[in-house]
Image (cartoon, rainbow, N blue to C red; front, side, top):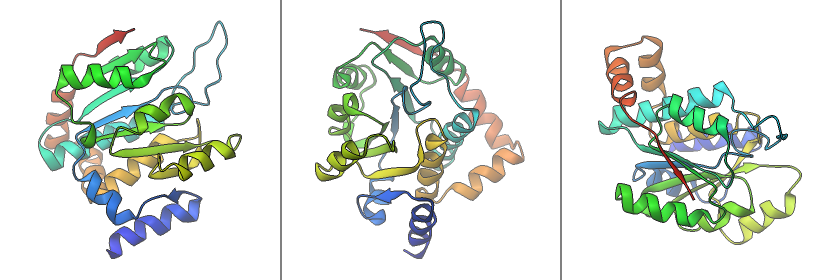
Length: 227
């Protein structure tokens, strides 16, 4: 318990908020085998123009890769990983394919439809899935899964209040949209796994374990699902 309290205190000092006890969150995390990510407002601020799509942060990319590697070290397999977005974003497709995610779901304005498709296709249990989200369109999906991570947005204080009141988030990031919130969440989950130091040390050493993980990861073909 001392280890968990240290994790909680470290993140709360940065401004994060735990909406369930960290012990409960750690227990849920031990069951997760899939991670779903919204795109706009999670990987970025959500800003875009007609000529420019929304992008991503390499620090977040490293966080997700370390999360998947840490899970692999602990469980001997790569967790299911997918992006679900309400828009069609070329950069999101590029990122998902570059990182060898299992799937990216595009144009799903009602995101539970994408979840249902993924559950049938990959035999996923919603109670073993964590979801990272930031806004109203994501709530219906967040209500169906076991881990709900809300990316902070200072411009939407009443939405954050709503999410807390209706118990649709378990953790609210200290980091804002587009400012490394994904990295923060990945570091938290790795720490809940009690795998942080081993995972990072193996990656720094470019160990045989990391090379085997990378080989397996890079054989995954990303399925693009469009509504």
